[in-house]
Image 1 (cartoon, helix red, strand yellow):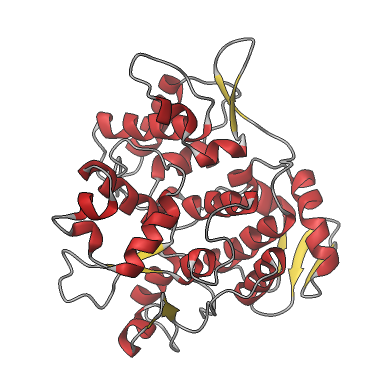
Image 2 (cartoon, rainbow, N blue to C red):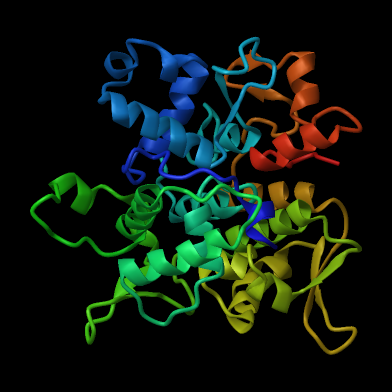
Length: 355
């Protein structure tokens, strides 16, 4: 997968704030309460944070595909935000994990942040097309710069914006680094740091991605990511090689830093339990096989993991308000969605039930 297909050309929309504890749920909950809350003049008072943090919370809700800009909004320049089905399933009143207490939810959010179309192109490049064993922020920034300059279809971002994205990524995943400008919140308040995807080498003091098995990564989340990747990339047939799922740019193995062998080990518990999934080797290469719509299988897999009945992700509801017919069509819940509707469906993380 290429960057232009995997991400949107946007940079530093997070106002330099990495995602903090409670922000994903807060973005969802406030959008349910008032779809225009993030553009209200009194938003800082209502949400209880500064103006820049209001914009950051809005961004992270969109970036994690928990929210989507309302396609039926009369004002396209200032659309309200409505929850996606995956957002509703996670954080709704009967959601899977409304308070983000399960470590699997953080891994699911990790996948959703990078899944097409990502609002974090710098992050996507770092996880998918950056292969340095050890690096510092300057090395990562230079590698990202080279990749972005090679894209003729994108306007080259300002260096300051690119550097802000690099720094936000390292603050999100890397161990906290104390400095004169580091607050206690920056050190303690970062949920995705728990994934331990980036560490600092004790020998060199440089960053490095943590490769290998992830003890807190549930098998079901890996299976969901694999099926979601299959649906988003439009894989033909009903099999895909584990090599592709591990090493292709944009694949789950890249997002979770797993090799082909480690990916297989992570998938095996789910393959043993879910009849619609199987491992086959018709040509000697291990392949994941599925029977049925991969998007529906993905929902069943997560239902089994959370052992709960979330709001129906195919019912077209958000919060306690029904989605009108126009919005149902725009979200791809109707038949034969247009190319624009399909793009919205994929970019908002609501592929469940899509065609």
